[in-house]
Length: 151
Image (cartoon, rainbow, N blue to C red):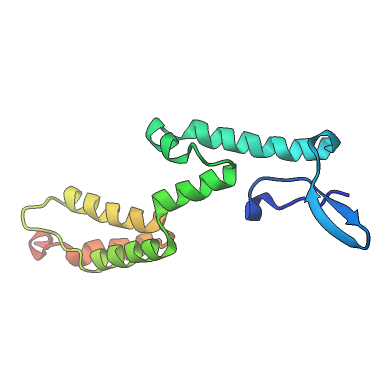
């Protein structure tokens, strides 16, 4: 009887069988020669996922992740490299929120330039899971426009 490990939580699928040693029972990896079709399909999914991730990263990143043995390992490394740890992510969110709240239009700056800078902040916040609604962004732009534009 095979008891599969969950790929999302534990890495690659490893078929497991129960081995009895007298009164004791323990779980051990199933020998490859005893894999059934279901085992082979699950293992193949892991290899395909790893191949897709490896093909999707550039040569610089490949060198950082080439030692990873599973798609889960590669994914976790990519996630940490690009998003950082939860602490780093929280710090980025705090910094960007502060930048958004203190954002002002500079003297001599065009509306287009100002909106581009504001969009960079709001897009980064959205990518970190902290979106700012469009209506809130519009209110922010109206508040920071110079009084001279209204005349």
